Length: 187
Ligand SMILES: Cc1cn([C@H]2C[C@H](O)[C@@H](COP(=O)(O)OP(=O)(O)O[C@H]3O[C@H](C)C(=O)[C@H](O)[C@H]3O)O2)c(=O)[nH]c1=O
Image (cartoon, rainbow, N blue to C red; front, side):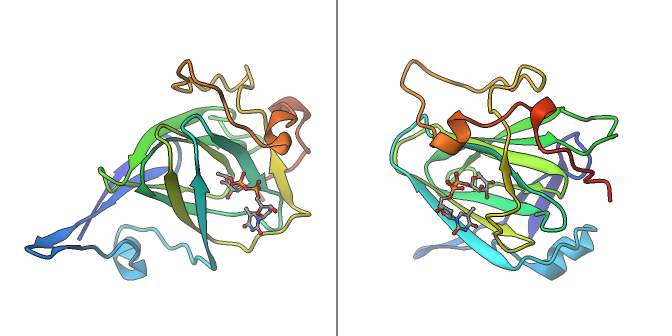
């Protein structure tokens, strides 16, 4: 019922659930804990989020929550397309500051699993894009943190086109990874 592909950074996976089509349209189990567990993915999610971005070129991220409110995320696009990015921010990790990017779209029907210890962000590639995602820990404004999307130490190759970039003030003024709140996510 689903395809799972490691993306080359510790635990970051692409997941593609099947769409069962008939003359009416399709049906898809977009989240099934037992199916994921069969593939060794045992994350309990406690909150569903839904973000809608009007314009292409909207960049949300890079975000994470500090311990003890760290979050794993299961992200998918139900309308439009995004370039989705996970960054390893675990102090002491051999792949610290490395990133993985993946296009998620309603058409591809694919998802990305972002484990605890990774910052997450996405750039919308079409207007009117809707992203829905599960998180494994409730939102905590006190533990919510951001890192600059264009941090040279990380070096994400965002597919920016000539259009403007739409950022929140929080993201525009986010610190670099080196100046981010010191934390040890390997706990
Ligand atoms: C994340 C979150 C936010 N909020 C409130 C806080 C603000 O009043 C408003 C917008 O929050 P923010 O600007 O942080 O939203 P995004 O920029 O889309 O943040 C998300 O962007 C990237 C892609 C992520 O991975 C995170 O899940 C999340 O940080 O919603 C809540 O009430 N609950 C929540 O779980």
